[in-house]
Image 1 (cartoon, rainbow, N blue to C red):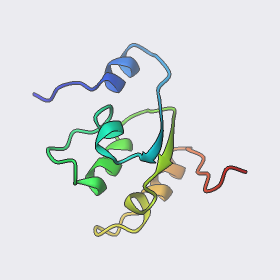
Image 2 (image 1 turned 120 degrees about the horizontal axis):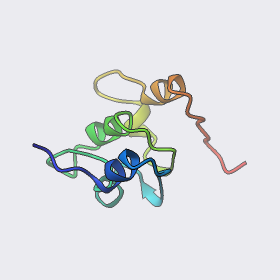
Image 3 (image 1 turned 45 degrees about the vertical axis):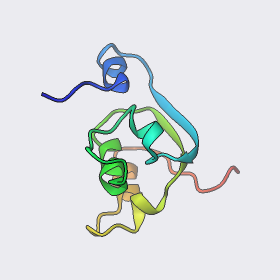
Image 4 (image 1 turned 120 degrees about the vertical axis):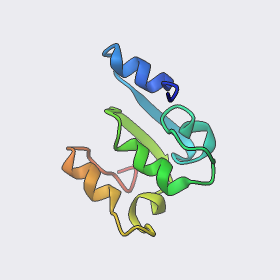
Length: 91
């Protein structure tokens, strides 16, 4: 049985959730709130874990793990299909 993340507990209790970081969103520290991977270097898998949640907002770096992936998936397009808005600049 996997442990529930803080984000999952909050979502289950109908809280709004978000992650805002000055590093990649797939970095080990923000990933600890959302991902279920055994290694901090599994950045593509960590990125895919974002799609398994109903997180309201996440802001940070790490675009390459969502877009130019070894498995050919474009997680940015998948996020758009889930009605997320993608911003590439601060404007």
